[in-house]
Image (cartoon, rainbow over all chains, first blue to last red; front, side, top):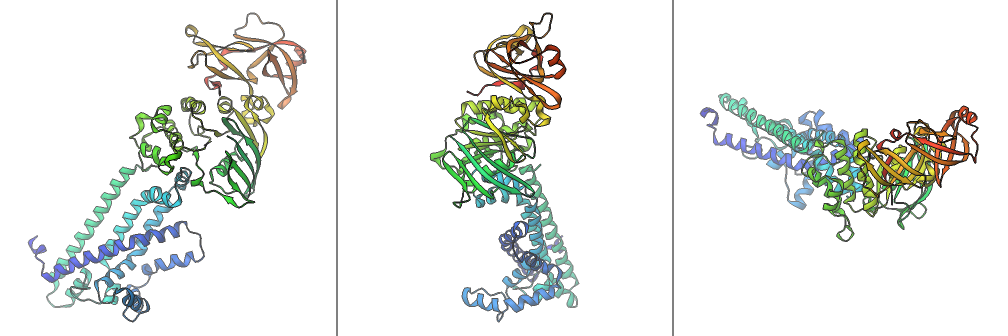
Length: 234
Length: 365
């Protein structure tokens, strides 16, 4: 046990950074995740299948391609990256924020899928009933739809978090592998495996990443069960 | 309080074209399934947008396609009770009840939580979740929830159809109290003659998306030809009576009417209360002289008003019993054997046990 927790400062940094990147990636994707899932579940508009395809693209593209596309768009000289840096002072390239963006994009399809399924399972008759009781569409959404899809949102968020903890290809392509800035757990493990005598460090970080992922899954399971009990969905 | 409708709406290959006005306490939209009554009530509630037409409730225009008026459902203040209670599963009974109240401007709230909870007898359920309620309890909570949004009009879309007979009997008295004690007009969708006879003051009969007839319930239910085939046996006359006494030794109640005393199985309604009694046409026998040695307790003297042809070669005989019209359905053979003809003095005979409790309800005042 001591051997496991006896991390070097660099290894601790990688663990902390990974958790930070995954948490930010997860939280930032929830609002757009709900919006896109709602559009895909309920919307009837031109280009819906294109939107659906775009959202799912990171799931099927090689991560390296996604990372490279992010680099082209959000890099210093990329159209979006240059605009954000100039007007808002937000820089993604070679920063931990870039790692969070890469992780968010990679986890987004998983989150949208989970939320979309739960929106599709909401009984729209309940929403109609809320309307006849005087609730405007926005109130119907926040008092009926949102509470009913909460388990789906949590499931999607946990999936996105777990995906972010393990994201490697897009992150390393987009923001490289800078210790203390963009070196997340997978990148650190990869680095260990590339140097002689790094086996022990690689193994330690591997175990830690297994533990964190297991904790996330258990937490999601517990929350889903508590919510299920609270809501007594028939 | 008036409701006026004049709409044309096409849905798939089914179209509804209805025009009627209602001013009663409880107007029943009556017809077999597929007659368009649910479509009509959904148009009222704003759950369906009509292709063409106009809907007005209490002087307020809700829909007028010509003038481009369409009030969205959440601004109509029309309460709706659905067949499947549709309680919010993530809220307690109390939160469900208070849901609509929250969206009603304080100045327009006229329903009080305590009064509604009391009226519907749901005080013990407030902290429960909808999933722990029986079908009848759910429906009572759904009625309370609709009422507490202080609506101008209450719509009930076959609120009893999903319940078994015992549960129906449990809820009917609450709807009667609602009709008599709350100052709120009700539009009630039903395909059951028993419910309509017991609850309605006025009836709009729908068939294939059209209004076949409309008027006071006592008139409409006597027209057996208007009833759907499956419900024709339930048709008959409605008699306004008053509870005269209860006879507990024989578990009977005696009602007095202009036609005379009528014995029915013991009902749970106080002496002196008005009761509307439905006498099914198929339950009425006709005798040309006062019968002797007969078990039936109710023998009403009268005179034949007219004889009409009924479905399947049967005859519908209308008997005027001292101003009360009683309908009897008999075979042509019986008519010939007794030589029944308009003007003939006869006796209408009804067995006490042919009245079941759903046939007698507190009359709309």
